[in-house]
Image (tube, rainbow, N blue to C red):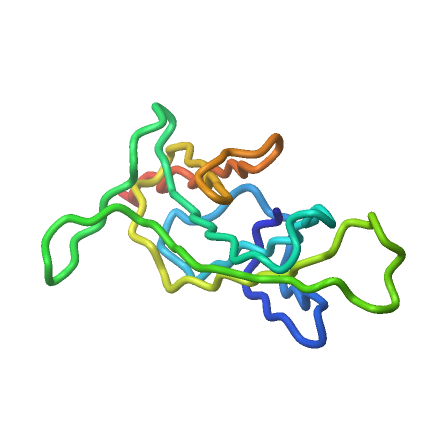
Length: 140
């Protein structure tokens, strides 16, 4: 997992712009989470469900206002891989995902974490923390 300004997937590879940051703001800006997932050989030919959740420093869901009311910041999707003919049997199979988001209004001077689950399970290292910069003092 990598925080970046933008990401896309082409030909199974991740293309990342402005990657590797852990501080943002204080004003909301577009961002992305780039994911490289290694799928076990025995998990191929099955649909896998992934979810990405934004949490605050206390592990609570981050809520934003939408036309439907206050909603948690979450992204979901599915992927399926097949056994590539050129990959030796038993090898992990790579999946690249790029999750681009518009500006998320987060309070300045706070800590947040993106958490990833696959098929309902949190994986080791499947979280990514970042901090919003404090707002500079107003000029007097």
